[in-house]
Image (cartoon, rainbow, N blue to C red; front, side, top):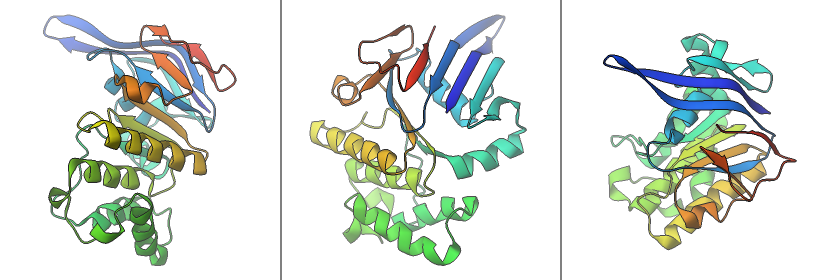
Length: 232
C-alpha cells in the first residue's frame, strides 16, 4: 500500500513561502489505478515527484509497503526508486544517443532486478508488446511522438515496478494514440498488480480510470475499497 499522511510541500519564492501540495491522508492499495486530476499549477507533478522520492516533503510522511520513503537518505531513495518505481515523465527523457533497446537496458543495469543474461531478451519482448518490434534499433528521434511515448512506457515498466507513475503521458498525442497509451499503461500495471497513478487533465484519459482523485476535491468515480483519504 501507498500511504501519505499530513504531507505538505512548500517552496521559498523570494521573501514568501508558496505551498505546492497539501495532503491530509491518502492511501492506495496494491493494484489500484487512479487518475490524478487538477488544472495546471495545482501540484500534480509535485505530488508525483514526492511519491517517487525525487522530492522530499516539507512535513509529513510518505510510506510505501511499510517503508517511510520521506525518511530515507537521497542515496537510499535513488536505490529504492530504481527497483520499485516506474516513471513516465512529461518530457519522456529518452536518451537520444541510444537506440530504444539500450534505453531500456540502462535502467535494468541500474536496478539489477532482471538477471543480466535475460535483459536484452526481455527488453526486445517488451518493445514487441508495445508494438515496436520492428523499430528496436531506432533512436528516439527517428520515432513519432506516439512511438516515443510507448518506448517511455516500456522503460517505465521494464523492471516490473510495484509503483508506476505517469505525468501527462498523452499531452502531445492525438485521440487514438492517447487511448492506446493509457490502455497499455493500465494493462501492464494490471499484469504486475502495480499501483498506477496518472496525472492528467485530459477528459478522455480520466474517463478510462475507475478511480479519480482531484487536487482540491474528490470526484465521482472513487472506489473506497482501493483508495481512502482525500486531497486537501
